[in-house]
Amino acid sequence: MAARRLTVMAATVLAVGACSGGSAVSGPSQSPAVADINSYPPMANDAAPGASTRAITAAAAIGRGVNFGNMLDAPTEGAWGLTVTDDFIDKAAGAGFASVRLPVRWSNHADAAPPFAIDATFMARVASVVDKLLAKGVTVILNQHHYHQLDGDALDPGEFAVADSVRDVRFVVIWDQIAAHFKGRGDRLLFELYNEPHGRLKGEPWNVLAARAMGVVRKTNPDRVIVVGSNNPYTASNLAAFKVPNDANLILTVHNYAPFTFTHQGATWVTPVTPVGVTCCSASQQSEMTAPLDAAKSWAMAKRYPMYVGEFGAYSMGDDASRMDFNRKMRDAVEARGMSWTYWEFAAGFGVYDPVKLTLRQGLLDSVLGH
Ligand code: BGC
Image 1 (tube, helix red, strand yellow):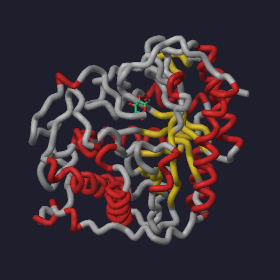
Image 2: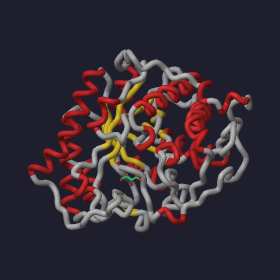
Image 3: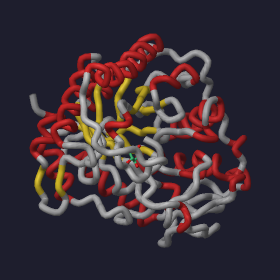
Image 4: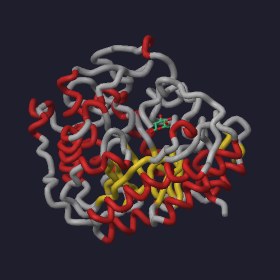
């Protein structure tokens, strides 16, 4: 759901011009045009052709997956208590997850000024995680996550600001670099343009920005399957406003945290924090869970693209029996509609893995992967 906030924004770090340190990778050409959004024309989005066999195959390959959340999507890796370890990769693959969605906060690791070069050390770090996952045979969904200025949100502690005038073009140029870096990877690497666009991106701004990012990625990755979702943020009810780019190698995505008062009870990053003690899943709660899935599925079928549920899960402030019931029912409902999914998430507040004991939380794991 919406951006994770550990604390109130008072501690927000505003260090315009800062980067995370280290040397830069070779970015796009240093021409003045790099800071001009008009140098990145949007792909047309008036006649999406429907999905290719490649996209349909990739969507099926996502299967049952998990998000490596609160790791590379923190302002810096480790700032939210987790780093990606070889143990996580081994345990996730060994448990039977067919895919890993890898949320990454690239925006806090790229220069604030043109050519917005991504820090080379960070690029190498992300690439090493991607490659280890690919070597395990899992499908990897690599995204941009939590570029808070893009949505017009306040920054997190430890996140630096850039000039508002460059935030959109910087997003596109960051994609230019990611796409160039990973262009040689195989079909099991998918790109997802941006997690849960919302706020200032609502409606047409996201349609245009997504289409610009599509154009830039396609320069180096003509066929790679790309995941893209609607805005405000990734809820099924907003799909109608989304214009699908004219590209066949696409998978559409939504997130589903309904009923929110159950899944996010006590979550400190939600304002206001909602009361704890909510159980799941009554008949009316089950209707709340399935209505967005029906809407998402029928919209995607009308557009002739596969639909993938990139996040669902229930925060650990709910009771475990209800969380497991929710997971199993949501998983079954998603699969009954022919959609793949990635559970939110592996080792933090929703996690199926205990990063202290280094053991899987078997009950929760079974609720997503078991019978
Ligand atoms: C956000 C996370 C958040 C989760 C559940 C994700 O999309 O990126 O920070 O914890 O939703 O609210």
